[in-house]
Structures are given as C-alpha cells and as structure tokens.
Length: 289
Image (cartoon, rainbow, N blue to C red):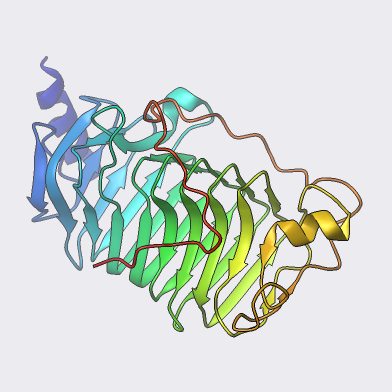
C-alpha cells in the first residue's frame, strides 16, 4: 500500500484528515496531522492554521521550511515528540545556512514538547505559547513576545543571536528550569507586563541579560555561571551601566551550584555554520513587521 494512502486511512480512522506533504503552503481548510510518514514535510510558502483549525505534529515529524517561510498560527498547533532525538518533533530550515521565518502566533495557541525549533524562532504577537523540554537554536531571535503569553520549561535556548526578546508592555512570560547559553544576548528586555524567571542557567552568552526598559527586572533565583558579584555584573546590562535603564535583581542566586537541568539532545539540523554573532554594547533586536 502506498505511504500516502496509508497515512490518509490512518488519519481518517483517527478523525483527523491528513495534510499533503507535497509542498505545504496556504491556509489549512480543516484539522490536519503530520507525522513521520513522508517526513521531511517541505513547507514552500507561508502555512496558516486559521482560527478554529488544529494542526497536530506527531512524534518524529520533521517540517523543513524554505527561507523566509512562516508557520502562522491563528488556531492551534500541537506537537509532542518522543523520548529520543529521532522521535522529537522538528521545525527546521530546508536549506543549510539559511533562516526560515518563524512560528508566528496571531491569536492562536501553540503547545510544543520535545521539539527542535532550529534556524527559525517563535514570535507571539497575541495568543499564547507553551514550550517544554525543547531546543530553540540557531535563530535570529529564539522567542519574541510582542504581546500574549509564553511559558517555557526545561528548554535549551542556545546559539541564537538573541535567545529571548521581551518587546511589549503586554508581554507575559514564565521561564523555568531552562538553559539560556551561547547566545549573542541571552535575554533582551525592552518592555513587559510580567516576567517569572526562576531556576534557569543563564551563562556563556556574550551578554546574559540586558534590561533596556525603565522597569525593575527580577532575575533572582537563577544561576549565572558564578557566585562572584563582579562576574555576574559583566553578564547583566542595567541601571548600573546606563541610568536610562532599569535595575536587574540577581540575588539570591539559585543554590550554591549550577542548576540541574535535564539534558536535551543537541539539534540535528542546525545550519552550518550558525550565523555569526555580532557583539555590540547594546542589543539590537529587530522588531517584527
């Protein structure tokens, strides 16, 4: 039996119509499912999940995006990977050394666990995102909040030009038990409504956290790679560096040793090389159009 027909029959039994893997793009007309059958699924133009529609990514599903192509979520995107790197859900670039667009959340809901998001990123304009036990790597900006809500738990956010960008006074974010490392800027703060950062390992970034807002940012309860106040100060840009910026609270630190974060597999499809990071005194994070 042909794989495409088999996938269709299986999805029909489950009550979720299969989505064709022959060059995805446009708006989904109904709920869909993408799995390991037919992977990698190539996305050649912006793929939109309209309000009221759900796209489900099964363990082992791989989506490869053409350069600049977005996954626009007005409805629901669910993706839960398996326990091994081969069975994780993957949203990656089709072409080595290029960026695809991003998961662009416009009033929708994204729920990802055990996922790779490589050379793209996640943008929350309105709506919400939940990302657990996942890798966000090799992106221009790993996670941008221009509004809405995001919850990040047990993730590795690494090797991005900027790991997290809080860019709106409506942004609400929680980041727990995650590793934010080897980014140009780990966290860039321009504006936010509320932020809960606890139990994270923020280290080995060119700048760990830059508070460019006038607000006080509570970053206590995290590990910065050192207990030495001088070393921690080097990783933080705030009022002590420029009176226009708000202060960052870093103490008390998380325990006496580094945060124990569950190991997450390295990305398998990261662009080679990851685009070079540009060290500048103030993070320049481009606002989304």
